[in-house]
Image (cartoon, rainbow, N blue to C red):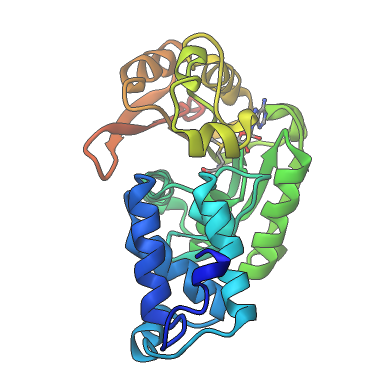
Length: 300
Ligand SMILES: C[S@@+](CC[C@H](N)C(=O)[O-])C[C@H]1O[C@@H](n2cnc3c(N)ncnc32)[C@H](O)[C@@H]1O
């Protein structure tokens, strides 16, 4: 959309025309979801939903609208993920605010929430949950939404991330049953508190693999959310090693792991005396959630 062509010919730059132009531009830059991205960005620039773009396809854009669209296009061309440009991402049927303070919630992480809900079904009414490494708060808030009578603590080492998690809980109506606390894993919670459920989607990418991540992830998502030592298991080892001291008898630990880490994490759990270890596959068929139960106290 250069200045020379911005008049767009006799009809001006109509919605249909800018969409087709932006789609071709994105395709030329190997953006896989070119048409969808163009539609979402134009809808955002115009404050309309995507259906309206089709209904109003012949409407010309004002210079101000063109300018707003051009700014969004520039960001996408620079490799910025759509969720950061739009400032939101849907997770577990809820709309979360996201920005560069936090990892963008992934659809695969919904399996972690499902496992947490299933494995705590017996304690449906009352319980105390802890979500470590909460980021946007997606796991903690989605769980709290389904279990409104539980107490849920969300923690992260990043105060900026925790700030956004708090905002999400406020917007999505779960904040009153929740506590937010910054700190390094379990240092964020009182030593004497015991939880019926501990969830975490911790950083689990190995040092060498961080360098191979897509540019959109490496350049835009928080480094603190990605890497975890030489084999990617540094944080997971710490969580599994310390979780028992923070779980109530019979409490559940559920962790998201990388597609090739499930067996090693299950072994770590077994060595740490966890029982009833289960692995859950994600949408792509990989074992991505490993969960286990802390033994119930022996009968007196
Ligand atoms: C992979 S992101 C997960 C975010 C969110 N739970 C989700 O599923 O989208 C990992 C999060 O762990 C946090 N983190 C990294 N190291 C940590 C530590 N030592 N203690 C607590 N949180 C940590 C990061 O700040 C980041 O928000």
